[in-house]
Structure formats: structure tokens, C-alpha cells
Length: 279
Length: 283
Image (cartoon, rainbow over all chains, first blue to last red; front, side, top):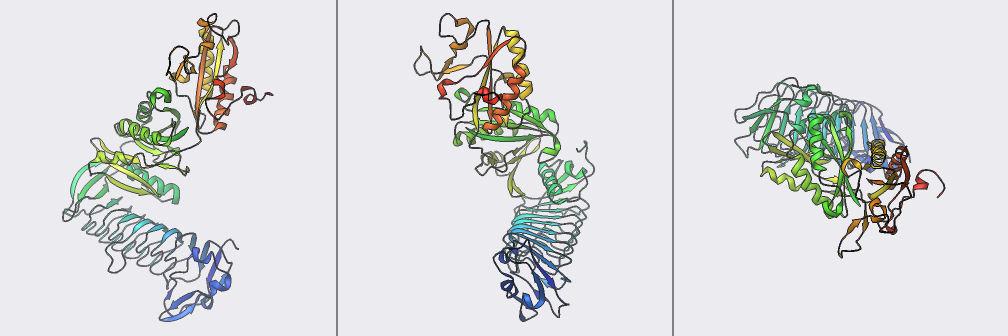
């Protein structure tokens, strides 16, 4: 048993590599040779982990992946437990279908990161692509649990069809944020693109910077939402999530919508600096 | 006993304290109040989940069912009603959980909103002031200890009261311990049952009543004219022992003839706190 299983990519890939299912909880029970035999796909060709990666360690609930991983997709997908560290930028569908554990990407993540996630934590130190925390193609709901924390910005349609869970983005996010949210929370400290919260039933979108609130949302009040303070404090303490102390206390404008649907969703827009000192 | 720790926060310490004082009101003894509760200590923003000033409260009951009910009643009537106050679980590592605030969500009349943060569910209940935030479940310490006590036998009421106040000051703020009685002090210590009335759960501790010295089997040494009791509830026997040591040490001062404790024939509960052992002397 080792402290960690380390997979170091040997050479530049000749096609996109799908690593779905190579997870820390799976490696925790496998010897080095068994890990080497795990099936992966390069383009449409079947391959094995051992043909592409140098492997160090075995039987550990911590998995580290190194190398130029920009064309490696599905890293950490399906993780149920354990820690996975991805050293560098990663491809698409990182942490998709996670149900537990932690996947930490020390770089950017591509499109569809955290797709259909049900639990655990996906952390990206860089930017994220489109459809962060979204739904699988054709699915009626997206995330059903877990937390996605992005320290950079995110692309279009984050948290679409979210049923439960949290997507927190330190930077801005693209258009169609929180489209069709059923519940859950999308937090963006940077600007939010056009048409946020369209078709939202009950979800929360928290905007720390500029946002154009759709006309199908109605202003309720300006207040200090206690759960935003709790959420930001929790993110700061657990992840070192960067946020202006003024964001903790608010005030925030609360808009209720989407009037075209159930209408119990909300967009909370930070309106300035705190009225009282924040300790 | 069963115990819970409730962390109440608010915009200022004034309002956190206001909610905590009400939550712990009329909670001196399980005999008549159904629970025992008091403020454990005040918390800085660094110590609270939402980085606001807070107060930590301990609440004890005789069984799990009662603990859940008391939490629901008291949080509903004191935190939900108190301006800017929020309520959090103070025993997050306790494996036994009580969904005490779940019932309170219905005050929101289907306008309430659930949020899960770091795996814990919270309820946002809309109120006229804005929103009340309540954590849904509270950890339950199944091995809480109630009724730890020691008696201060003074020459007069002034010396007994001064010693009791010193003991309370020494115990105040010790983690995991509360003093549920007024000012932390009890003047009406009791014995189990009664001589003259059937069905009484408790009655005056006549052996320690100075006015009854010639009329009963008195336990009072000569020169003792006033007795006060310090009653402690704690999350563990160690917490009680440590607090008793600090309190007794502070209470040993001019005008105090002896320190004793209510033993109740060893029938009050499974935990026995032997004063000489606690103070480091041979039993």
C-alpha cells in the first residue's frame, strides 16, 4: 500500500484519451499491474493505463495524474471516494458523475466538468469551460448534489438544470447561467453573462458583480441574506475562496423568478459595500 | 443525560445574547422545566459558522425524544423570533443527529428554502425582518452528565454567597460545562423524595438547612449558618471534574467552613464525583 498512486503521462497523445472510471476509489483496491491493465480509450481505440502512463504506487485512496492532460477527458469521472489531484490543465468531463470524494485540478478544466454530479467536491484552480455542472445530453436534470468550486471564470450555461448542489465561481460566467435550475445554488463573484436564470424553478443565483436581471424576474427587496454569508464563510475557510469581505454582509437585491415558470427561483445581486463593519 | 450544543449568532453580540438568554430561560431543572440549559460561553466571529458574534448554549434532557422536542420549541420561540439571529449545531462530530429544526421550516408556509452547505442542510425561513437561517439537524451527546454538584458551607450568607460567586466566575467559560441555575447558584438544594408528602420527586435537603439543625439529622458542622450549592451539567465526566476543581478551588476562602456534595445515596446517576479525588487528594 502506498500513500498515493501516481500516473505520469509518458508522451504526447495521438488522439483524445478517455479516462472515465479511473478513479481513486477504484485504484484503492488494485495492485500496480491491475491499475496498468485498466481500460482506457484513445480516440476509438481500446488501450490500457499502463501503455500510456508510468505508474508509481498501488492500493492508495489518493490518485495523482501528471503530464500534458489537455486532451485527456473524463478525469475523475465517476469518483465515489478518495482524493484525486490533476497536475495541470485537464480536458472535458472532469469529475462527471462524481458521487463523493475530492477531485482537485491544479489548472483549467474543459467543457462539461462536473456533469451530472451527485456528490463530492470538484475543485479547479483555473478557468472552466462551458456547461460547468450541467446535465448529461438529454437528461431532465443536471447536478443532484456535491460542490464545484472554480477559482477562475467559467463559460456558458453553468449549473443548467441543477437539481441540488453548489457551483461557485470566483470569476465571471458566460450566458445562460442557471438555465432551467430546479434548485441548488450558483455563485459567481465576477460578471454574469446574458439571460441568467431563464426557466429557473427554485434555484439561487448569487451575483457578486454585474448581472443583467431578465425582465421575468421581479425585485422583492434589498437585504442581507444570512445563507450567503454562511456560504461565503464556508468557502473561504475550506478552500481559501477569494471574496471581498463586503460580500458577506451584503446588501443584496433579491429578484424572484422566473415568472415564466414556478417562479420560486431567485437572483441575488450584491449592491455594494457592507453597511456595517464585517469582522 | 442527552445534550445538545446550540450556536446562536446575530448581527451583534447584543442580539445573539438576547436570543440565548431567552432560549435558556426557565431551564434550571429537568424536574419541572423538562430541560436544563444555560450559556456555555460567548464566541468570536472566528469561532462561528457565519463569522458573526455568537453564543454557545448547552441544553440537557433526560432522553432523546425530549431533547428533540425542547430544541424545536425553544429554537422556534427564541431564535426564529429574535432579530438577525441564526442557529447552528455546535456538536458537528456527534454521530447521533436530531432534525430539530426541520419542523420549524413549516413556519415559512411553503415559502421556505432549503440550502445544503458543506453537507449540512439549512432552512431559510422568510420572516418580516428578512430571513431566519436555521441548521436542520443537531448533534446529540448521549453521555452528557447532569447534576454534578458541590455544596459551600459558610459561616453566614455573605461568606457563602461570596464563595459561590467566586466559584461561578472560575467555572464560567469552561468548555463543555454549564451552570443552569440562577447566577449559577442554588439555595434550595433538594433530596430525593419527601418525608411528609407522597409522590414528591424532590423536597428540601433538610440535612443541610441551618434552620432545621435541631429538628432533623443535620449534616452541618458547627458554625455553619448558610449553604449554597453549585450544580453543573457537562458534556462529559471529565468536563464536570475539571469545572468542579476550578470552582471548589475558588470557593475555598474566608468564611467557608467546609465543601461537601450531594450524594443522594449514590442513586442520582451512574457518575460519582469524589471531591477528594477531584482536588487531587487521596480518597
